[in-house]
Image 1 (cartoon, rainbow, N blue to C red):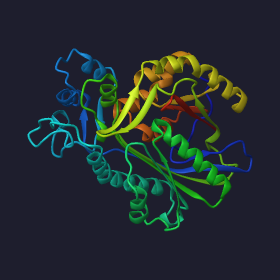
Image 2 (cartoon, rainbow, N blue to C red):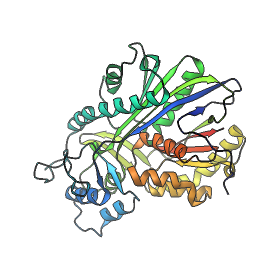
Image 3 (cartoon, rainbow, N blue to C red):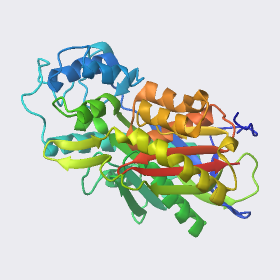
Length: 388
């Protein structure tokens, strides 16, 4: 059974720190956003069949799509004015809805990324600053996160221009780290805020996975096409004096590279977009290594054991990954409710998904401490323990 601890009174303020009686690092505001257009998972499968070379609905394409537990996904590549059940892809289909003869080039995909990433970034950043009651001129540092697009200058310049951030704002980009990238950004933000008590760190994650859908019937491509979606998240982090009631304390970060896992998960830039490698060994590696790694970390760094975790935020990289964590840690099925809820409603938005999980955990007022965990290329593990 999960240990019940006092509940958070409001999800509008989240507090983080690290074993300090004097200084805490506070997430003052949090925001999540998805593109306006979305389609059902059934329609996404029908569209994918046209360029995946899979004609039989009982084949592996249908198995992959229906096995995701996803109801719908938001995409920037959808055409305007169509119902979710009749959606079409602008980047992959012509005006008559026929699939293009060849996949878009990486250059074409990056143009699409640049066109749409900035609008999401600006909108979600404004919402996070408003939730934090932090005027834009008080932002001292800006951390951007993305693994789905590159442009220089990137959307951080649009944030500076359109959100009226200071011209001398400190800038850092966390790029190409995959699903756990926002954990790395939060860790960097905490270090900045602890070093500078006047700092207000704005983190903005934008992931447009839909610009990297792949043609063909390669198993990894079908899985990636079936799982990934578009979304953005942002938060404002700063330091304050300890002593407030109801705060969430960031006890520790875990970062661990599983031995011998370099070829299990990959994210590679190719001529026709970014291509994923997803090997079947991933759940087995999680099952083999995670219990010992997590148990040692919790015991040695956090002074606690797995049954003392109040709620879990397992990044929904896919149902098999979440289930592997549940099984190997012997957690009750309800421990993954937040993960499967976010996956069902939005799909896997890579690094932006972290903010959707955090928002949902806070909205549900879940018992603390929280343990949030994600997996990335290699196979690498990133986790954060948040407690009162």
